[in-house]
Image (cartoon, rainbow, N blue to C red; front, top):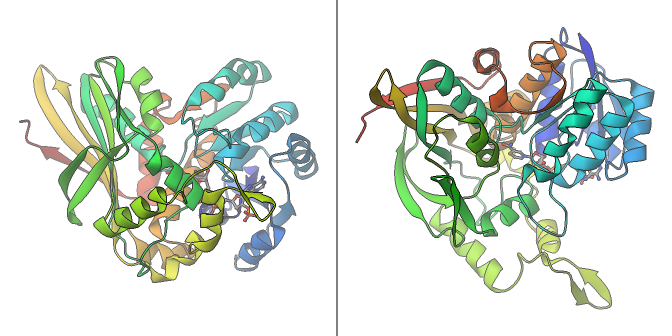
Length: 394
Ligand code: NDP
C-alpha cells in the first residue's frame, strides 16, 4: 500500500520497524534511518524481510529532504527525539510527504511541552495537501483515542478525565529510566499542571499524590504531572470540566531522583568542566543504563488508560478504559520492554490508517480529532487489547 521512512532507531524505532515489517501488505517498503546507521543495520539484520537503512542527521532539514527524495516514501514516521520534530515537519512540507510523530516539539534549551510550535503548520499542510498526525504513541496517542471513543460511544458530555499511567515493571537496577532519560527526567522535574474550569492550575513537581488500585497490577502511588495530550484534549472534548494526568513512581525511584536533582545532576544548564561545557542531564544519560538494554531484564506489567466521568441520557456515568501490557511478552515478540512497545505499536497503527487512506486528510491533527473506531479495532489486532469497566459514580 505504501513506502514508509522511519527516523530514529532507539527503543521506540525498534518496535515501529518490527511491527511495520509484520504487515507487508500495508508497508510495502521500509527504510529505517537514524543518526547512527549501525543501530539501523543491527535491527534490519534481525528482520524476516529486507529493508533499507540510512544515516541521517534529522536536525538538518536538507539531509531529511535529500533522504526523502532518494527513498521516495509516502509517509515519514518520526521516532527520533522531540527536538527533531520541526526540522522533519519542514522537510516533509518541502518534499510533500505525510508526517507522523509520538511527542510534541521541544526546543533543546527550554522544556516547553506545547503544541504551539506544531499547530501553526496546519495551514501549510492543508495547502500542500499533506497530513501530519501528532502524538501517535500511547500517551499521547492511545489515551487521546480512548477519550474520543468514550465521547463517541459512552457519553453525551465528558466532565472529568483522569489519565492513569502505571508501570509495575521491575528491571532489577537501583535506578534507570524506561525511555530516553533526558526526556523522562525533564518531564518529571517540571512543575505539575492540570486543567480545571477553563484554567491551568500549576503544582510543584510531584506535589499531588494519590493511591489507585489498578486492574491486574494492584494499588500503586500515583503522582500528578503535566502531560501533553491534555493540551489538545481540552480543545476537543465537549463540556470538559477537569482533566488531570497521573503516573506511578516507586519510593526508590523518587529517592534517587531527589538526590540527583538536589546535587544538580538533572539540570539542563551547561556547566564548565575542565575547559569543556557539559550539560549535567546529558552526562547523567551517558552513565545510566541504556533504556534499550532493559528489555530482557524487565518483568511485570503496565496499565495505562483513562478514567472518564460524564453524562449519558441524563444519568451520571463513569468508566475506565485501559490496556494492560506484559513486559516479558513484549520482549519475546519485538525484543523490547512494554514502554517502547506501547509507544511503537500505536505509531505503526496511525501510519497504517494514514497509508490505507482511512485517516488520511490534509492538515495537522491530534489523535482525538479522527474516528476512534478503526484505531481501537487495530489495537486489539496488533498487540494492545483494551478493556472498559464501569465504575460507581461517587
Ligand atoms: P531513544 O533515545 O531510545 O531513541 C531516539 C533515537 O533517535 C536514537 O536512535 C537516536 O540516535 C535518534 N536520534 C536522535 N537525534 C537524532 C538526529 N538528530 N537525527 C537522527 N536521529 C536522531 O528514544 P525512544 O525511542 O525512547 O523515544 C523516541 C520518541 O518517542 C521520543 O520522541 C519520545 O519522546 C517518544 N515517546 C513517546 C511516548 C508516547 O507514549 N507518546 C512514550 C515514550 C517515548 P542515536 O542512537 O544515534 O542517538
